[in-house]
Image 1 (cartoon, rainbow, N blue to C red):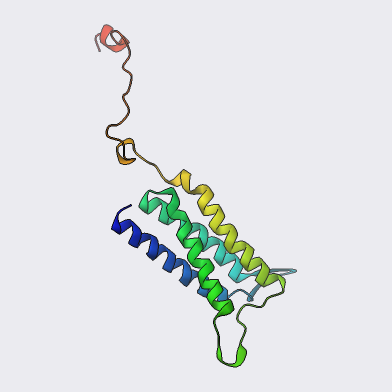
Image 2 (spheres, rainbow, N blue to C red; image 1 turned 90 degrees about the horizontal axis):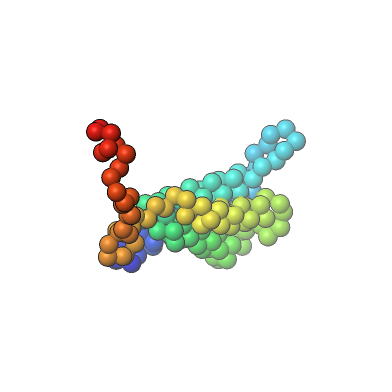
Length: 150
């Protein structure tokens, strides 16, 4: 991997950390749709981890570029949970379904991005490190178009 690729991995990780902090602050906010209550942080964490992971894999053309977003998200969430704050404020509670849904949705988004990464990454034969593209077998004998005079 080149130096630019390493910097891109770090940038994706930092983007994931920002995503973790942003979505962590929204983890207990609820979106009420009649009798259904949805965690805004969970929905946004899932969407941003999938989109960020797939965008990183597509941009770098590497399947492994889907995981730095999820790792950065996890580090950002850990910073919200364990970083000392004056007054003992708790940003993400340890219990309750919104916080649990947030954590599972964030991890789920990272896993989905890594699982779908091979579908968005197209590796061309000359880019995979091989010296030459694989040979294409030519049909033996004249083609039907050549015989018909076309």
